[in-house]
Amino acid sequence: MTDRYAVIGNPVGHSKSPRIHALFAKQTGQDISYEAIQAPADGFAETIRAFIASKGGPGRGVNVTVPFKEDAFRLATQRSARAEAAGAVNTLSFDAGAIVGDNTDGAGLVRDLKNNLGCDPAGRRILLLGAGGAARGVILPLLLEGPAELVIANRTEEKAARLALEFARLPACAVGVKPDGAGFAGIAGRTFDLVINATSSGLSDSEMPLPGSVFAPRCVAYEMVYGRDTPFMKQARASGARVADGLGMLVEQAAEAFFVWRDVRPHTAPVLAALKQA
Ligand code: ATR
Image (tube, rainbow, N blue to C red; front, side, top):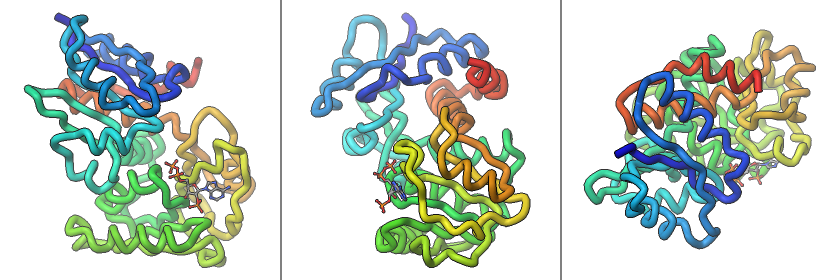
């Protein structure tokens, strides 16, 4: 019987994941199905249990999107180190009664930077904007790449300071650079080679009080939101930065999840090209 996978969210109708995974399955010859399932706001665990037990074929795994990544973290009976660090799970695998939680978002960002954008985080001065779930999910994978520095800057400074301290204390970060926390005023006059917007400001089209000085010459400015030209992207472009949106991260985190489930790594370039064309 065909192995079943799904993306669970609320809302989930806009999700590109079914298309991405269908393209991966076709390319790699894997016999899987992949659907989008909307779970009720208070019904994530029930939706997962029903999916695992459904008669339509064995439910092997799901991707988890807004607002259920913390629910998925709690539901998992085992978690990867990167899921533990992120405090959130975007990939669940169901195996002999176990619910295994992973987080592929940070790996997806790092792969997009390195493989698609030619921007290796190693040795770079990185500024990460935001201190919510999206920022938290990428801190450990970025630190493990060996940047020259990682500054977490947030509108609410205390949240950035707390997050930086938490990661500085992680055993996995014992060697290498420790993250710093700051408010936006605290980064005025400082310059970075890679600036990543992990705030949700792009979703509301709102401006950020970001000092223009942060973009070094030949800086890469990465917006995690995709499908719109956000105020951050406009500001970065006006400051001479090379600008990328989060579509590549979306495809790469999906490829990493596909690899976790199927032990096969799909080629992402043709899938990214197909999505860009659409
Ligand atoms: P997510 O899971 O997408 O990270 P979140 O946990 O609600 O969402 O966090 C949203 C992040 O975007 C926060 O860092 C928030 O800053 P505050 O902690 O100060 O609220 C940031 N954010 C949202 N809109 C912003 C704006 N217009 N300017 C600056 N930061 C913004």
